[in-house]
Amino acid sequence: MKIEMPLQEMRDGVMTITLNRPEKLNALTPEIYSFIGDCINHASNDPACVAVVLRGNGRAFSSGFDLKLEMGERTHEDKLHALHEVANRARWAVWHCKKPVIAAIHGYCMGGAFELVLPCDFTIATESCRLGEPEILFGAGPAFMMVPWLVNHKIAKDILLTGRQFTAAEALRMGIVSTVVPDDGLDAAIDGLTQTLSRLPSAAVRITKTGINRAYETMGMTPHINSWVEAAAYLSYIDDAARSEFQKRVMQDGPGAGIAWRTSYYKTGNAS
View 1 (cartoon, one colour):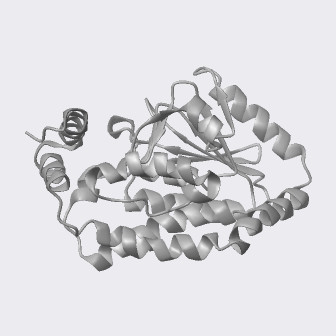
View 2: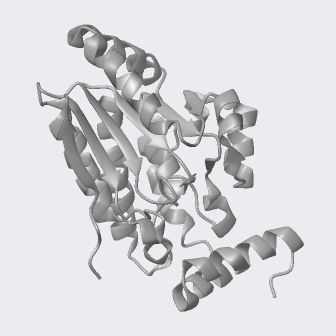
C-alpha cells in the first residue's frame, strides 16, 4: 500500500510540513515519522528557515499512529527500533531544532501525534480540537514520556492513566497547548506568530530556546524518556483480554471497528 507522505513547502522563511493522509485522519507510519524527522533536521540547519509549522490536511491534525501497524505482529527489536530510532527520533528532532517549531492542530490530535506535538515550542489549537493519549485503553503506553515534564503529576496521571479525550480549553489550562483559536482562525494565528518570529534576532531565539530546553534536560528529562522506551515496547507482549479483543477487531475489521468496540467496552464494561 502506498503511503501518502507529508507535503513540504518553504515560503517566506517558514517551512510548513503538512500531514497528507486525510482519508485516514492523517494516521502516522514509520515512513512518515522518518520524513518529518528529516525535514526538521534540514530546517534546523537551513539559514533561510526561520520557523517550522506542523499541520494536517482534512478533518484532523492526526489520529495518531496507524492502528493496523500498531496492532500487527512485530519482533521486539522491530518495535523498539520503530519507537526509539524512528518515532522518537522525529520528536527529538523537534526538541533540538535550532528554529522554533509550531504545531497547528485541529480535529483530533491523539496518541503518537499528541506525542509529536509535545516537544514543539508552540502549539496552536482550534476550539473544537480533541486531544489525548489513549494508548492505555489497548494495553500500550506512550513511547515519548514527556507529559510528566510539562504538567503536574495529578494531571499527568489523569491524561495517561485514563486515556480520555480532552478539549483544547482543558489542554490550555494544563499547559499542553500555547493558545486556542476559533476553528476558522488557525491560518491567521500561524501567520501572526511566524511573522513575529521572523522579526526576532535569530541567534537570540536559537540560544534562548536551547537555554529553556536545557532546564528540563539538566533535571534528567532526556535519559528518563529514552530509558522508558524499552518498557513501552514490552507492554505489547503482556497478555490482556481487552487488548487481544481490540487487536482482533482492528486487524479483521479495521481501526474504526476496533475503536467502536473499545468505546463500547469502556463505556459499559461489557466486552461482548
